[in-house]
Length: 331
Image 1 (tube, rainbow, N blue to C red):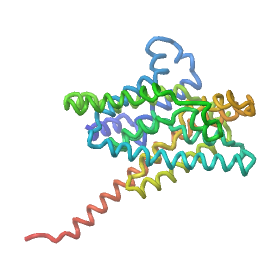
Image 2: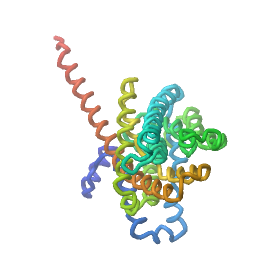
Image 3: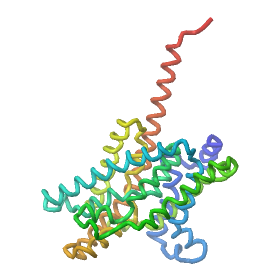
Image 4: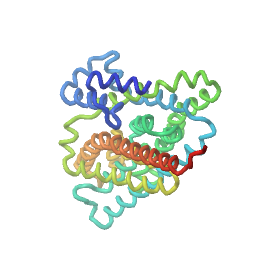
């Protein structure tokens, strides 16, 4: 089936590249939102799809859950924590270092932007990337990453512990589609075979919806500091990848998590609401930087993950070839 799809794309002249399942529709959504936003506000199904990323992500989590064998649940938790802990540690440590020793200014970035951005992974994009390049346990790790989606981590890291709390019902709402998918997929092979093939088509729709929340203006407004924030996020992903590799993982999940969610722009306002030292101008600057980094990491992370996937595949092929050459022929 995959070979037939590749032949079809070659016939119509569509080049293939890492992450293209999500990036093609994401680019279409970005361009529409940038230059023809009125099209996305036309109403009915068009607007519903353009603004329906959360609902579609819930469906994808259900489908991903159906692909997970219960025997792999410990691997899911291990993968998720292996990614999450180093990522949080790197972001918080560097952010607090900037705040304490650099007068909270690292070439235009402050601790609010650094911590609020790097810790806030784009879970929808992560699912899309790992659906193409990852294993079921790497895909399932999205549930662990989603536990820190929100401003609470940043607020606690900046000294606002106890002011914000993550609602238990919100956590349950995040995990429920995945858990339901796991249950259904393990109870019925038929349901598993029915749901799992829907992952990639849904990922393409998620990509379009995510693009509809971005714009070229984000890149321009964020400027060089937004680009720098994106670079820091990718570096954090590479460092997390090294940790994951040391612990026996492939490293692809870490690179796939090296993104910033569009909803990370809610963090500056949330922090400013409890700490008046963060002025409206500071919040506006942070939002522009985060918005730019969202777009850049959405384009870079899939490409990096695809590169690593190809490198690992080549390494495995070379190892198999060497092993076959070393095995003596039998008469």
